[in-house]
Image (cartoon, rainbow, N blue to C red):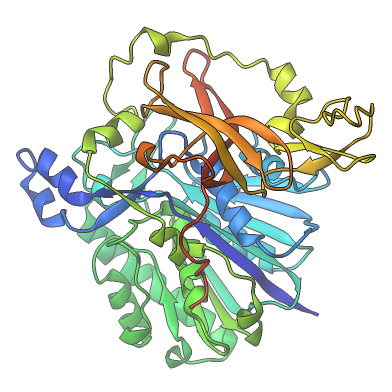
Length: 486
């Protein structure tokens, strides 16, 4: 048995805002943005946040593995939706990983994900590391152009790993390229050339050198170099400074996704693993108040991994968005008159949430042990009119089931942050039905019989008390191939 990376997954939101739309809106004020108005960036839908994206990345990572017994889950982000609630606990509950699990949130630096991955790789039981970011950005700022929303997940443990850690090195330095305080809504960032010349270039190459020395390898042994950096060619310059061939520098996904902050080193690692061959050596750099450098070697198990969407599949699952005003509204960057119907009280009874957490967060229904009928939600009485047995319901997870639309509506009277509100009856293929909200769906594509999959999303937000409710929604089943592997 060998310790290493057993599986990986990712999640990139479906919506892609065209950068030209941002440049067209703000070019009159900041002409420099016009030069950056190329490509697109991933943007979270109104009902997505780091928690929901982490759940989807975790599901992608665990795809095809069957029941997995984990000992730990760490969630890395600098944009957790809750400051005093265990965000990793919500992710664990949504993934139905059970309660015998050590969970932790890791944040405060852009290298939180690589540090969490490194800690998990130092040994112990099977661990899942998820990282997700949805950074608030000020309108007309450069980071609005360069950032993207997304998530990645890595499963480590003993078994037949797809990649093993050859060596790692870390350096800590209180280099402040940007910061955010509890009182500030947005990052304050220093001048980019200074970050390049005083941060990346002097700090990263020595850590790479130390990592390679531990591995007993030269820089030419690195076949893929993954280092997030917004400034063009910074990764190439760092690689050159460390002696790594320029051909090994990985695409930072700027043109098609944007930089996903804390999650981006893992997003790039997943993208590299999707294309990797046995024997490849992948180096990952996490930068933020110092640097983490991890060097992996890919094994022949990479070919045996079950298909998953990964980075490639999620990038293919895209819808072009040119409405910049919608992006501002989704992120509350502008104050909209949302109408009286939006004023409904959204208070959540925390006692009811706790009692019904398996139904609400884990999406677990019931299966009658007498007749086998599936139903959602789980109740004391079997819904089968020919059975009606009492207290025979066994827990039955519904989150991984595919259903079909039985009926639907696109409602323009009820309030929705992204009208019309689409919802309808979902009939699950294996049995059971439920009236559900739809997400990531276009009204013109709604049709009876259309296959739908379940996705963990924000149900609604209680703006009076600052609480957000999560639940599962139905989204169109993937129309792209599971193309995580090349």
